[in-house]
Length: 123
Image (cartoon, rainbow, N blue to C red; front, top):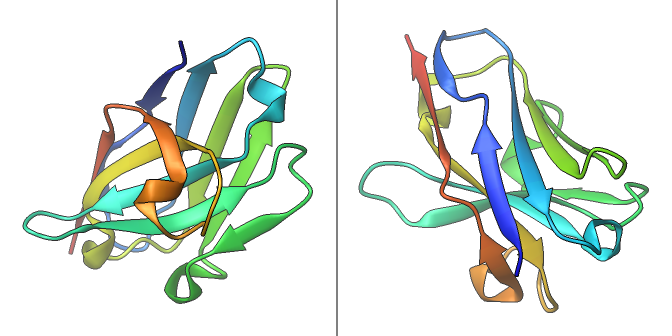
């Protein structure tokens, strides 16, 4: 069984930076590609970014390239999302998930999910 626990969310002002984390309990953590999604109130869950098992290759939603950075520490079994120049429209619950196969941007390509961490950006 795989468990994911997100942390690091909170309330920040527009323009600030925040790094959120996702700790993964899995014996084979280093074999998983991992992704971040987010869900704003009343909206669908949208893909943010994905990182391959080694951390070498990263993929981003076009609208977030340059502001968000995904990374991982296989020794710590943790994946991170660094978010810079935050905007009120970045307000959402952020989820991490383990990638199984398929298209990175589709939720159906991921199998295990965390409970999410709330990020709120005030104007």
